[in-house]
Image 1 (cartoon, rainbow, N blue to C red):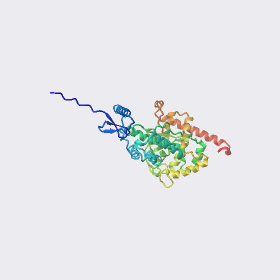
Image 2: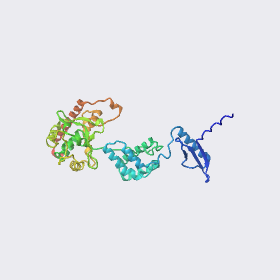
Image 3: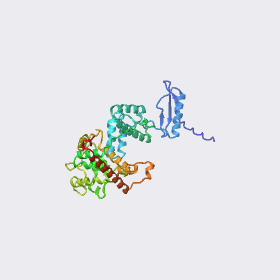
Image 4: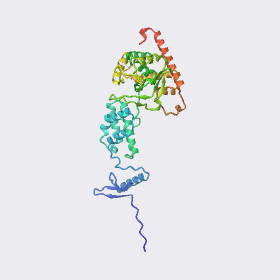
Length: 383
């Protein structure tokens, strides 16, 4: 009895000549489906070479389904944002960047239709109509979304490949002097002067100040506990919640000259309830960024600071005085609520005692500056 004829092994791919004279390549995909090359070839050799390269990609697990990238970018991007469990302010920022800067160009395209030349052209056009910082943020967001699409094996390679395009080159920020901080505090008025001092000598972020309550403040020792933040969205709604990182949850020891300022504010302007807010507007509600901003701009103009000097920039005064008072980089980072992964900082430590020493150093610096100012002729003080 004759033996069974051995089963012929299925060929990976085949080529055939079309009526046009060009050559078509077909192959078996890893999922068992029969696929056709996305293009035709001039010669049979070219078609066979393409098949060999495709087979090598499959064997090395580098093959990407050519149909996988047929996913609408806008749908994928919006789902990407929803799945990130972002902080409210970050979620708002990403959706705004998508709506204003990314979707108008890429929204109707599929993922695999977004190309490196297309990204370069989009970035160049954006730079003509908006600021470089906004373009950098938009590019980073686009790159992050496309990187996830690469990880999901929807595209072979991220089309965002412009070196340095996601980097922001922040210009040197101005630093307010002790005298300027005092003038700003006076110009803001009694209700808001403590916010100026907290920003400069805390240094505390405005969203951190918005969340401060009576129990967060102690007079002996003079300190503020930062536990939460309440950033304001563009809608005017404040989103109260945990601070964005463990580094931001901290105790800030204040320089002694602020003792009377803090006590005065607690007595007159903080909400009277045991857990009352520290900073509220004239009508008894959390202060609004728009209302506070108008007061800030008037005060800034009175001092003569640049128009781009932000309330947030008052923090630089505290950083500078901390350094001049002998604070280490780690001391300043703890005080400002900043974190870093640099290995050199892991072995440094800044405890409560050291933080009080930093506060005392700032206190001495400010007192000395005020004494020097008082000793100068009045007409030269604002020169």
